[in-house]
Length: 163
Image (tube, rainbow, N blue to C red):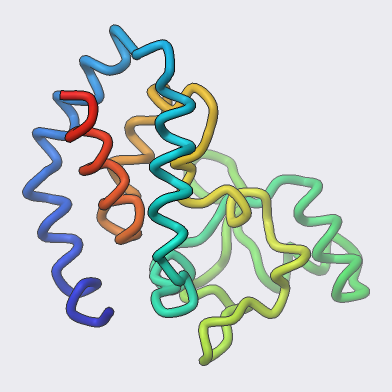
C-alpha cells in the first residue's frame, strides 16, 4: 500500500487533463444510467479495497463538519459544541468548519477511527463515488483521485466503460 500511495499523486496528476476533459463531456451529456453504473463500480472496488490498509484520506485531508456533525461529536465527547469547535476545528477560507490539523486527531495508529459511529457526514460518504448525480461533482472527484486509490481506480474503470 505504501508504494501505491507514494505513486498516487503523480499518477493522478498525469491523468488530470484527461479526467477534466472526460468529466466535461460527462457533465454535458451524462448517460441515463450513470448513477447505476457508479454504484456498481463503487461496490466492485470496495469489495476488494480495505480502507484500514490505507486511511490516506484521514492522514492527508480533513472533512467539512456540518452543524449536525459538530453537535453529534460534541455529545459523544460530553462537550458543548463550542468547546468541540475550539478544541478540534477551525473555519477555512470558504467559511466551513474543518479540522485544525491533519492527520485527523480521531485516527488511531491502527488506522481505526475512534469516532467511527459518530464520524462526520463527509467521512461517511467519502470518496463520494456512489453519489447520485455523480457527474456534478467532477472537481472533488478529480481531487480525490490523488488521495484515494479506490477513487482513482473507479474513475479509470468508469472511463473504460463509458468511452
